[in-house]
Length: 238
Figure 1: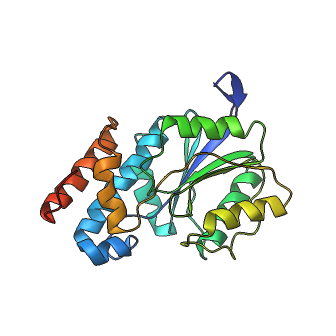
Figure 2 (figure 1 turned 45 degrees about the horizontal axis):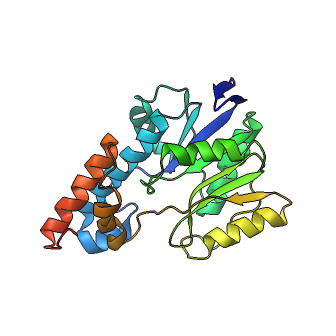
């Protein structure tokens, strides 16, 4: 994939969106437990739309990595509006760490060098965060944006990820463990800022405050959905 002039230098940085197809009973089970499977699916679709909105604004190549091989056609459909070159690369079986290692290995074997991984549950990511990732990889091996809950909302590297299968995924120790694993592999690591992701009902309801002034269309739709759910639950909007 060719170099693109951005931020004053030539880069060849690829955005990798790791996602699940929003269908009932798959993903966001903590939201489903509190709000029902239909609403959880609506939220998952709205969150994915935010990630795809970011992919549409990415200045380089994009990879969509759906959870299953049978979701390739779905991924091709949702990727259609993205103006940059898009590759669909389904995830391999295993825990999240194993799947990320496999994606990373495949892309690097294809000649990719600078990779920025995101999920579909961090609507707070902004253009400044992606710019920070591209900038960081010019000097550092790895750049992470930690999440408020101890996880990460963005992980970027110009080196192959170390073994990730044993990390405490879905725990408040993930961010620290990931940074430590990268340093143990001899990589320089930079943590920048702090983001948030949406796993629990309380995370979702907080969007009615966190996204109040965000004018991006997919974020406005997600904000409106959070406000509607709060009204349904008779929770006052501060």
